[in-house]
Length: 66
Image (cartoon, rainbow, N blue to C red; front, side, top):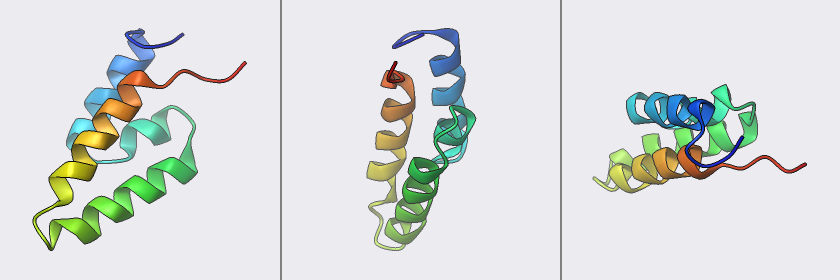
């Protein structure tokens, strides 16, 4: 399981709709909360899209440590 795997694609799609949801699907609750809160706070300054994109890319490229 790694970049391009079905699990990562599903996680990236989840993060597309809600920042951090993909990380939660991958079993990374701390990263999910950080990305969700950062996106929510930064949307007030019209910069939330940066965190939103970071969330999608992070979910797509995640490779679990063995």
